[in-house]
Length: 165
Image (cartoon, rainbow, N blue to C red):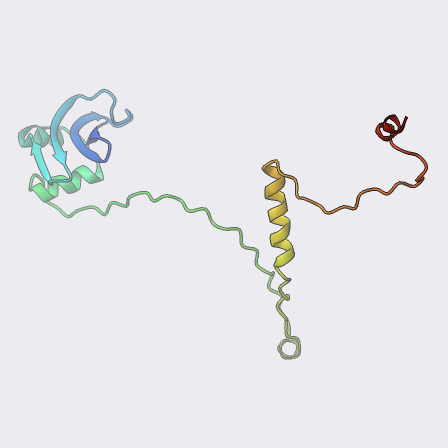
C-alpha cells in the first residue's frame, strides 16, 4: 500500500521535510516512488504539487496523520485535522515501596497508631561516605595509632647496635 508521508531532511536542530510517496512498509528515508513537495516547519512554508497529490489520493494512496493535517491546513483536502500525539521520553520511575494495606476493624484503627520511624543522626553516615570517597581516590583515611612499644627494652634495633660498637 502506498503512503504519502514526511521524510526528514535538513541539518541538526533545523528540520525540513520532503513529502514523499512510498510503500508503507519501507522506512522513511528509504526508496520512494515520487517526491510530492517539501515543508519547512520553522517558516510554515510548504511547496506542494497539488495535482500529483490529488492524483495519488484518487489512486488509493493513504496519508500519514501529519501529512493529512498539513494538507487540510493548506486547503488541498477537506476535513478535520487528526489529533497527533508526539511520543514522550520515558521518565524512570523512582522505586517507591509502599506498605501493604492491611484491613483492620474500625475499633483497632482508633487504638493503634503507627509511629513513623525515628531518623537516625546523619553525621555517622556522612563520615562513612567521606571515608569511602577518600579510599576510592587512593588516599586512605588517616588513622591515629600509637607506635608499638618495645616489649623488651634490652633488645636494641640493628641500626643502633652498629653505632655503639
